[in-house]
Structures are given as structure tokens and as C-alpha cells.
Image 1 (cartoon, rainbow, N blue to C red):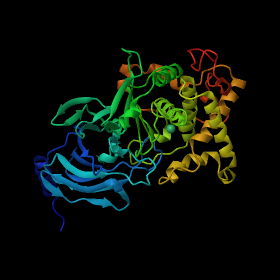
Image 2 (tube, rainbow, N blue to C red):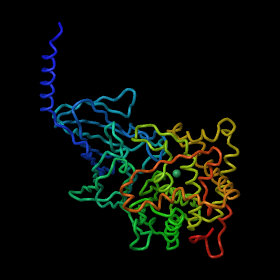
Image 3 (cartoon, helix red, strand yellow):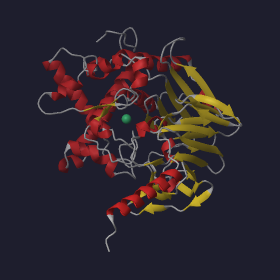
Image 4 (cartoon, helix red, strand yellow):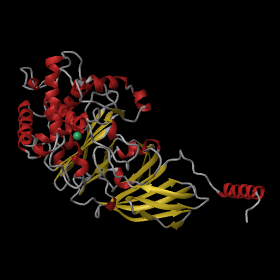
Length: 489
Ligand SMILES: [Zn+2]
């Protein structure tokens, strides 16, 4: 039997009214509250609580998988344990998406504007090449391992209110800013989820802070040192001067600072996991060597510091278009990884040498060794150079055997030579610095997102990568010392 159309319409309207009256709509602009209790130092387990705005119906929660700076699917959902979801105090069943283990599915009942998550984030397995440091006396928290988020919105538009509790007596360094401190909890200023995942928290029992800019500098750079034992936090005056020179040289090279403030996080100690990871307003540098005491033998660590510092411009302020996804679970591509990493490798070496962090001879030796290494690799006989940019996505459980940065570095040097021969004109760093000069603090705040770029190697597009001071022959120490001054070739 077919119901009368008018009766059917009346029934639908009534159902809608009943449903609307009973529903409590979530505020889409309301921030996700994330609380991380990091006091379980002995077991190295983070206890995470989240309160996420929700609306009635199916909800899909994502654990970050494709992570900026990692260039591949390195988010590891096996770090999650003890997941519980509650709504209005009642436990909700969840199930994992069988087609995507990083997604959790729940049904949100009506009258529930928020759901509560709790879970433990355990230490990443030893096999993880980009494992965050969790060691005696040191915590390096990368937020992607301690957050889940609702699918369907860009992470740049999801606001988060993070807070953390640290072991008693620990001190911290980070790019986030503290809004309040209460009952042992530090509450940070709200940020987007994109910024949160790009803002690691480092804390430890032994800590030292060094300003790398003159007092009163706008958008300053600070060096945060963590060490175990504390004797490792004793740089000489010359070593401090070299780190200050790195900041000065990079500013001269790129023209402007695309951050509000920059926090260079550096930890050194046995038992730590070597970590080097770039962020927009900070970088992670964790070394097992005695960074300052082993100054003569561990020079590679220092051009890595310069490398990740240069990433603030190349990679963070400007990023290859297909490496900039709207969320952390959309696969990214690495078609321009040779620019992202190769050009940065080049800048890192140039800047480290100019600052006096390493000697020109050490840099030349490293470049020569890379060239020799690549020349002998059998991979070059069966795969093209572009295919090496896929390595991080392919080898997500192991360090890529054919390092993506090195071919890019050598290509960059070749591009510089090509440019010098054909074009004496435009500074190549204009590509990064012109935009950088536009980034006044006010504009920087409005344009927090990285800007995508795209390049084409066809024809003479390679010229886009040139910049004049970066001559390979320009490395030798000058009579006046290893530091370059503004305007010098
Ligand atoms: Zn890099």
C-alpha cells in the first residue's frame, strides 16, 4: 500500500522536529583538548586524554600516518594501547577500519557534543628509524604519537588545546607557548593540529638555555640544550659563537625569518636515539656523541644541525606541492624531494662551513665521498634518479639505502655550475627569500601554512634553483677567517 503523500510529509517533518529538539550540535570551531601525562618515566609510557567535539552519527577518528618531514607513512598505530572511547560518561564501542588500521570508527549518540578518548602511547619499536627519543633524563614528544583527530577537515583548520604534565624537576624547551600552569599541568596556547604536530616538546632533568641572537632581536633563535650527564652541557665560547654565526649566516642567505621565534632543540647523551627532524619553528637534534666534547670527530652532527635549520625555509616555509597534504592520513608524494632534501643538504653544508661549525675541508671531503658512493651503487644501473625520491615511502621500516638527499645535493651543485656559466644574474635564493621578506611578523601570523611550490626540470627550469654565493670553490677558508660577511661572494 502506498501512503498518502501529505501524511508522509507530515510524518517526516515531525521526525525532523523530534530529532532537532533532541540533538546537541557540536561547535565545529571548538578546540580538541589534548592532555598528555608524561610522568611515567620508568616505563616510558604517555597517558593521553582527548575531548573531541562530535555530532550524532558515525565518526571516524584517525591516528596520524603520513608525517611531515618523514616523507613516508611512518606514523605507527602499534604505539597505541588501551584505547577507550566514552560519551557522557558511557563507554562507546569502537572498531578499527579493516581497510585502514589507522582509522577507528564509532557511533556518536544524540545529545552528546563531545567524546572522550583515553589511550597510552608507548615507546616506538627499536626498528623505527625515526623514533622519538625517550631516555633516562630526556623526553622528546612528537605529538603525532599522542593524538587522534576526526576525519573530514584539514588539520590546519582543527584547533587544539594541548597540555602536558612532566616528571618533577624537569625543564623544557619547545616552540609552543605556555598559557597557564596549574597542579603540575602546563597548558599551552591553542594552536592548529598542523602546528601542534610540528611543535615537539623536549624536556629533561639537565637543561641549559642559550640565546643565539643579540638581546632585543625580533623573531629570536634560542638554543635549548639537554644532556646526560650534565657535564655535556658545557660548550666553549668558540662553540657558542659558531652556533650564533649559523643563525646570522642563514639570515643573510635567506633574507628574512619565517617564524615567530625559533627553538633549536639539541640533546646529547648515551642511550638516546639519534634524531634529526625539521619543523617550522624548531628542530630536533639528538646525538649519542658528546656533541661539544667530540667536536673534532663528530662534525657531521653539526652540518645536520645546519641542514635542519635551513629546512625552516626550504621544506617548511616553502614545500613541494605534492608533499603538502590536507591531513596526516592522506598519502603525500615526493616528486620534488630532491629539492626538499637535496637543496637543503647543500644549504646545510654551505652554512655550516660559513659559520665555522665545520671546516671547508670537511665539507669538501663529505661531498666527494657522496659522489664516490653514488657512482658505485648498483641501483643507478636499473633505476632513474627520480625514482630515488620514492625511497622514504617504500622503505618505511628501514633507513633508505639510497639516500635521497645526496643525488639532490650533487644535482644542486651541478645546477649552480650551470647557472654560473649561463646566467650571472638572479640570486637563486630569491625563490625562498623574496617570499621570506614578505613574511613580516603580522603576515606570518596570518599565513601560518606552508606555501606549496612546484618546479619543472624541463628546459631551463633548473635555473630556478640557482643562487650566486654558493660556489663550490667558495668553501676555502679566507685569510680573515672562516666566516663570510654580507655581500661577499
Ligand atoms: Zn632534511
